[in-house]
Length: 322
Ligand code: UT7
Image (cartoon, rainbow, N blue to C red):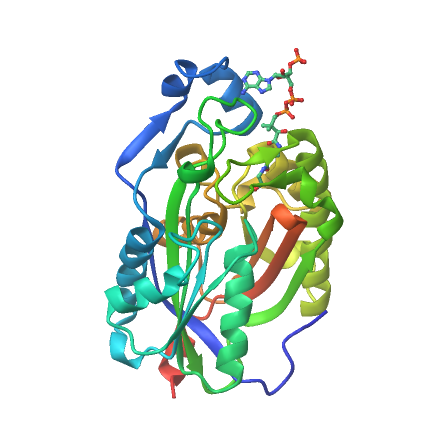
């Protein structure tokens, strides 16, 4: 699978934004609804609280608007909107269409569902659109998992929450940020984590854990190999935020210290498609990323999907916008 081909039209991230609903569901709240404890949840998952409420369209509109404002791009100039979500507001139309209207965009808009790998899938798709001539693409990842989570079931209810993260991608003359990417799916494992239409999430936690570590390592290794870089070259890992123990185990196998990762799941829980852009925005806002740094995105989720990509952070490339 692919390293970005030489000569392909590249892109850089020129703005980012996030949105979390106001309502917070703490571990203490969950103690009243199921047989669990704050101490167990913190120790076994790293999660202290999660946000609930809002709709996929409203959260996407908020994060997308923030990203647009930071980039300074006129909404009318956007060429495409790609919205990663596992929890669209309706079966039809795609939630991206609602968000397109709310943001005043005049472009194609579509949803991508690759579960918790979704935003990385969307980011790669957006680069493909730019390689084919789009100038500006808005890439959002949003999930409202409270609508498909049973908060009385301790197998799943401790993990999931709502959130949204977005970036604006703009084409540049010359190579962009994306060095390599990898998208995977192991459909035979779909019974480990699924939700029927109208139902709630069902999960074999230990099986997902075991597979998650393996496929994260596998996908990240492929992306590093395609980019021609090693674990030592990676300045920052932005992993899917499911469980700090999964992240720690995967990073250990990759030979990357835990301190080189961005973690937000203590306050957000697992927000599926939103988790990677939320963790990216947190790192950028905290000034943890310098020009030239290599960032490794790596996600995994139901499907079971995995996705990774490596970008070289290059804010200066914005000057080369066509
Ligand atoms: O985006 C992908 C989404 N999903 C995931 O990433 C989930 C991956 N899996 C996990 O994160 C973990 O498997 C869980 C957090 C779901 C569970 O943690 P675990 O360390 O795998 O727990 P376990 O299922 O092996 O259970 C260990 C013990 C059991 O008790 P005994 O048999 O040792 O007495 C469980 O009954 O912990 C008990 N337990 C709980 N206790 C308090 C299981 N869930 C809970 C709970 N609160 N919520």
